[in-house]
Amino acid sequence: MGVDGDKSEVVHLDVWKCGVHFKILAIYSPPGNDPDFSYVNHSKHSMFIGDFNAHSPVWGYSDTNKAGRRVQDFLSSSNFELIFNKRDPHTYLHYNGRSTTPDLLMVTADLHSFTKRSIMKDPGSGHRQVLAEIMIPKAEQRPFTPSKTSWNFKKANWPLYTRLVEQELTQDKLDFALNPSKIYNTIKDILISCAKKSIPRGRQKKYRSFWTDELTSLKDRRDRLRRKAELTSRPSDVQAWRKQSAYFRKKLTESKRSSYNDFISNINYQSDSKKVFKFVGNLMNDPVAPPKQSFMVDDKKLSSDSSVASAFVQYFCGAGCKGNYAKVSL
Image (cartoon, rainbow, N blue to C red; front, side, top):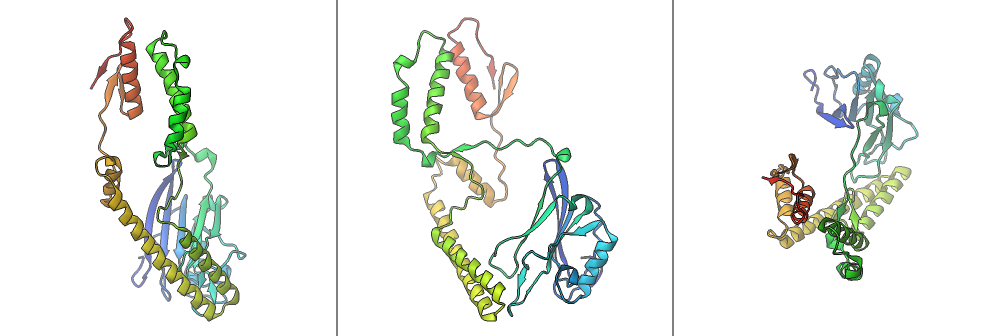
């Protein structure tokens, strides 16, 4: 990257969040490298993050190397500013027990006051990850529509649902002299009320089917050993932490493989066609589902399952009422 002799590896990302376009540069500059930042010409909404292997007293080193001088010159000649707090923990733990901070975060001046830098917990490698949180000003945000919660039918209490439906859906609660559409709404409300009491809903973030209590225990032990190694700076403690990290990664890989094999062996290709399509699409990096059949109802185009089902219910309920027809066409 940059001029000849620069061995840096840089990934350029374009990210849109709440309608705002962010530019992210993620870099790895190997030790002893003399990086060149002439390719960085961003003026706003930009972030520069990664392992620079740059030494400077500005971010906690006792010396300054070539990469450190390059970073200092870059900060003084560009619109980027360094996000660093000397009270934060170091990001790298060496084999000899010494801790340093080669991982840096720089953002353009328009993001400096809205950016928070934090050091994450032990990821199992020598480097702690740097987390950059950016609060987008409300003036630049676009309306955000939250995702709908889903019904978890696999964890549903079906005996409870059956008992509630039998208790609530009785003839004394239905007036068959009413219009069929009103009877339908009454039945629908009863069924939904019973479902809410017996079928869990929600959308769990970062769900991991392979995670177990054993992995939690191993991860906690690894984190404790890392904290101990950072406090004592003894090579023996660093070696103990690295051994625990390797053992944890081994168990994690075994759990992932076991979970994957269980999924493949238990999947039903006939009843779970959508699940199969999503899984195969993710493997092929093509998760886009084929378009659904749309319907025209009263000159309105309906494509979602719920809207099409409601249109058919209204159509058949109105079929018995004079002059209350809806035009449905494919």
